[in-house]
Length: 347
Image (cartoon, rainbow, N blue to C red; front, side):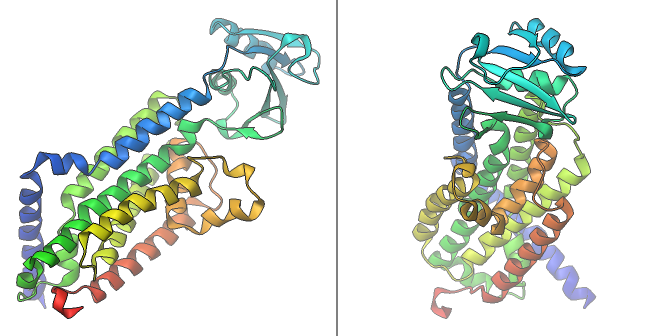
């Protein structure tokens, strides 16, 4: 048993080296693995700029507590016109385009129906006054909650990046090797299927860490990170990578056409974007459609990541999300290894 374990460990190391050398023979291939990540990152930033491209707000702060005067001072220092008022029913009264009200340690920002102002800096000023981001609600004139698009979708961008690594960086090369007959040669060795599969992903894992660092850096620079828990976020990212790679193993288990996997890599991001709200706000949909994404493993990962880099409140505890992701990753990896075939003729 000990000799077998040593062989598997040595085989994993050699296979990892071979996979890394093969990948780095073409720098364009390495760059293409992150193309999906950077595309959605730039798209999200662009949409966020357009969403918040309104005029400077004229703010009325309802002065019924200690937050009012401090907020007016903060907004004035930022060059935003603001004043305290006794009470106001709508932003248009007195020419205001935004009204801030405080209650029970929470803040509500109501925006005007016409000439909707750029409100993200306003919300940031409220946050700097001592209100947690999770307790700040920005409402439009129709009663719908407005969102900081970049903040809400940074985790979605990370999903897109991990998905690209799992499909284009893991599944496609494996299926290509099967078509070329390379896997048939490995099938004549005593290396275990799961050992072989995991050995194909060290470089992709490193790229996943790099993408995570970029997202965390943007979140920190934008002031999104509040109660940052580095250890918890590290575990979330590790489980997320494991879950996406396991999906890649499962997809490559018996596939024999790499073009089909590449087409799937183009379809799945659209589906994820639809379910995450990156294309349109989910709160505008019926309640049943707002609940459906909670059953998707991608949503579990996004919720767990957003808890640390965006201060969002997940629909269940992060630790429960961990258990769900770990179970899903283990199940897909085991099934993928059991179904894996070395040769197209075995299918």
